[in-house]
Every structure is written in C-alpha cells, then in structure tokens.
Image (tube, rainbow, N blue to C red; front, side, top):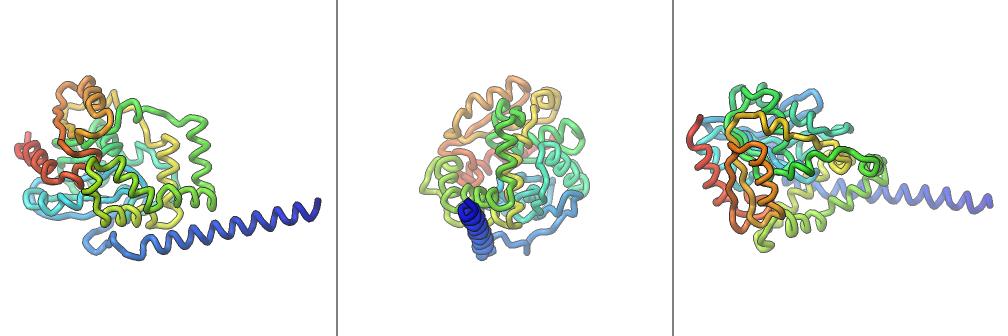
Length: 318
C-alpha cells in the first residue's frame, strides 16, 4: 500500500512537472515572431493595468474596439486603420486581458470594460468621440454611453452579441469552469489547448470568415501570439468569459440611450436577422444594414464593403 501511494505521488509530481514544462515551452515559442510589436503604440496607465493603444490621423476622433476574446487585439482593424486615418483621428486599443495590454489575475466583468472605455475616452481622447465595436464589446459601449452619454457621438456595432446571451449570469456550472481554468498548471494546459494555433485557425474558418480562402495566415499567427502574450495570466480573461462574468443585461440601457446607433452584420453570421431585430425592438431608432459574403469579422474579410458603410454613416455629424 505504501509503495502504491509513493508511486502515485511520484507519478503525479512528474505529470505536473511535465505539464508545467509544456506550458512554458508553448508560451515562449508562441511569441517569438514578435508580430504584435509595440513600436507604433503607447500605453495608457490605467488603475487595473497598462493599456496598449495607437493614435493615427487627423479629424474627428474615432475609437475602434475589437471583439472580446483572449485571442483578439487591435490587429482586428489592420485592414482599415490607415484608410480611416485619412479622415479621422483613429484610436485603437487592446482591451485589458488582450494582446499587448496587461493581463492581471482578476475577474473580468462588463463593468470593468465600461470603466476602461469611459476612462480612455476622457483621459486619452479628451473629447466626444465616434466609436465602432465588435461583438460582445458592443455591450460595454452601450453601458458606457448609458452611464455617461456626453462622451460619445455616433456608434456602430459589428455583429453585436445576442441580447439573451449577454444577459446570462454565472451559474454553478460556469463558476466551476472558471475555477478549473484558473488552476495554475492544469488550467494553463487547458488554456493552451483551446488557444492553440489549430484551434484559432478553426475559429477563423468556422466562425469569423464566410470564405475560408480569404483567411490569411498572418492573422491566425497574430491571434495566436496575442493569446499567449503575458504568459499564463492570459487564461484569466477566458475563465471570466466562460464563467459569464463579462455578461450583463443591457436592455434597460439600450432602451434609454438617445444616440445614433448603426448595426452592421455579416450576412452569413448565424441568427443575424433575429439578433438585429431584437436590438431594434428595444430601440426603434437603431439603423441596420448587412454585408454580403461576410461573417463575424467583415473588417478583415470584406474591409472595403465595411469601409463604405463607415464612410456613409460617419460622414455627417449630428
């Protein structure tokens, strides 16, 4: 019996050491290409961590906010920034827990990102701004606008998340999942599995793009690097997303804000029509359009088509 216990302890210890070494190697090699350089950007010293951002161009401020995921960064706007900077002062940022920004060991919440967007607009942009956000990040902007309407002008949301999904609160199951992902070695290994290059490539092919032949390896590699910058702490954002801690019911805010809102969806995005109709149901002043041959990220898949919509919508200020 003693030998069995001893062998079990030895086996467990060796397994943990092996997992630790695998994790270490993955994080080292995933960022060796240095695709997400910080040379062109600056850092906003926020109270929860340093936020990487860029500023380009001249004109009315336009803030671009990427989809919230552990893989995302401002690379999402790579095809549009230079073109938009001809007419606007374009700001991009990596949200806390993403890309080149800090990835602290905290629980990430909707309110956290609401405060980040508000503080960034006040302290860095310093004036009323137009804003474009993707997916789940749209909910942060809606809540920020509801809390401080004088910060924003026009808003465009690309494939905003379904209102029912955003409203899901943490449950016993999702709380347990969050705890599992936050385990130092096992949680890190799970994170590395679901943020592998192959997994991210499948995400592009199945969820982000309609036409798989348009997927560029440079974006897959950039998303892969983004997911591993900052080391094992990268998993804490994923644990909060999976735990539903970044969710909040935004219906009351959506009803009450009076700003001009424009929803843009990729025609091939699942349940697009129902999602957009729900937003309009709660605020019938919202305008809606869709982009053909695109899915979740038209800014990368069909950038010219999205650029045309942006120019039309933001051409005249209220």
